[in-house]
Image (cartoon, rainbow, N blue to C red):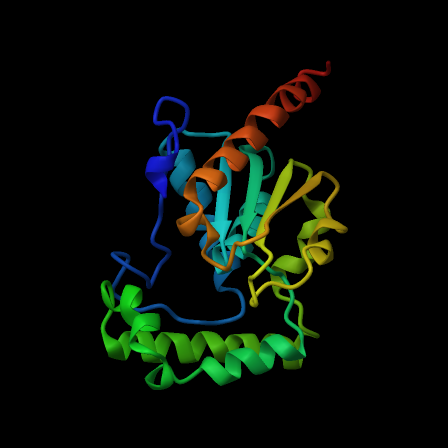
Length: 224
């Protein structure tokens, strides 16, 4: 997917949040405010690299982290791109995650990409804990993740991308209606991982979004 971008036009910094990938040990602790905490690490990293202001892009749960990055980073963040992200969960979503909680019931092909990086035990424990967080959000927080409360405070341009075949994502209007400067793009044949299966389309959409909105953004900051 990364190779679909023009290396002369963009610099891409990818992270493993604490508890995932190479950012271990310790293993990930799945709890309500994990995305909010991850946002602080993202901002500090970009400040240390002296790459501010920057565009933050998050996929799925990472999109909720991206929202917190925008809320905490404010002027350090020029744009936010949310891919296959929801800040709410409804009854159907809660039941879907409950139904997928036990990874021993998954097809081997569904686990294949995860097991290239993690053990069977890590996947089983982490996925179950993540599903439990979704259940808590639905039961105790009215189905609203903490990131949902940040949306109305975002001032920078926000691009929401989702696939029409994505069964994990709620109506994007639930987010876009709360954001002052939001744009929604949908891929008619895209699923939850549309950035992988339709990487060229995704790279073009995101690149054009930043290019089209960067000039007005600079003018506003300069008082023009």
